[in-house]
Length: 102
Image (cartoon, rainbow, N blue to C red; front, top):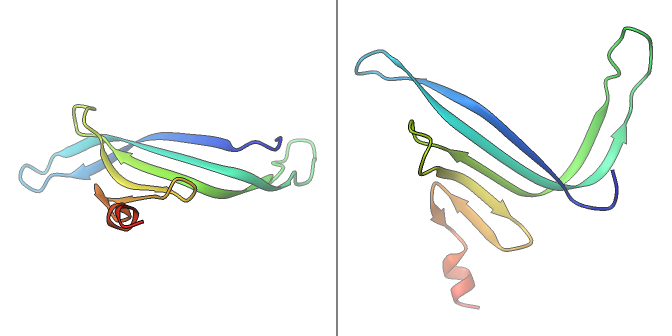
């Protein structure tokens, strides 16, 4: 890991129960995290054993997006970017008014 920011993108599927028909609804979930490398502990190396490696990042950007059931028009649940002054929760930009006044 060099002196550059690292990006981790996690894609998964969120399941929820629909109360009307008791069916299960599945929607894609995407999480993007960017950060600076802070520390790495490689753990202990032994044959046939996990190393228990840990990596620490200083997170400066995170975005959590839940797509619709069709996979289009994603709903941004959270977007936080401390360097670009972005703070959006459930589609509401909480810094827009502050930035407009500066």
